[in-house]
Length: 75
Image (cartoon, rainbow, N blue to C red; front, side):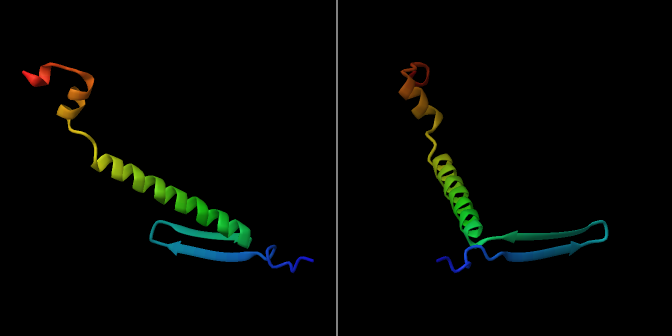
C-alpha cells in the first residue's frame, strides 16, 4: 500500500520587483520530480567541469602539428 508521500506536491514561490520589472513565479513538483531535477543539475555541472578541465589541458599548437606529421614547425 502506498503512503501517498511520493505524490505530495512541494510548492515554491518567488517574486522580484525592480523599477522596470515585476516578476512572480510559482512551481509545484513532487519529490520524485525534485530528485530528477537534482540529477539533471548534477549532470550539467559534471559535464561543464569536464569541458573546463579539457580546455585547460588543451595541447599547444606545436604539439598539434607534431601529431599531424607537419614539418613546418620543425624547421
